Amino acid sequence: MDYKKLGFGLGLFSVGLGLLEVAAPGRLARWLGVDSKTAKTTIALFGARELLAGGMLLRGPAVSTNVWNRVIGDGIDIAALAMAFARSNRRPAVGGALGFVGAATLLDSFAARGLDRETARTFPRSERVAT
Image (cartoon, rainbow, N blue to C red; front, top):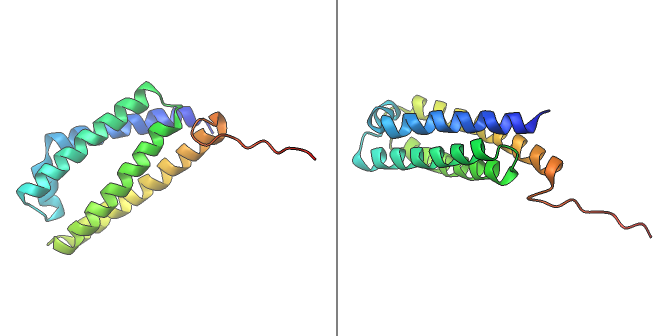
């Protein structure tokens, strides 16, 4: 598996998603059934976070901490969507978004762990000492 290419692809995906969230937070909020000023602001801020994460991945696709940043962002997204699920009048849409973010989290975790194994930058390899 070429984890560096996967990291680069995740960077492109982050930039695309971030652009969508920054450009159309109102449409996304309506689609999720949480059409409030707070929801729109939150979506736009999450888009800015995605743009930053994507830029970092495009700059350093083989750096596992850049992918771990996406995993952390995914956790934040899941928490926000779980809160939106309780308030939404379009729960199937929020459920679909939760499934999508869950799948992205699995892919991000897979890439981050693979990069960790290859580079040992985030979690150094432990060398066993022979006795």
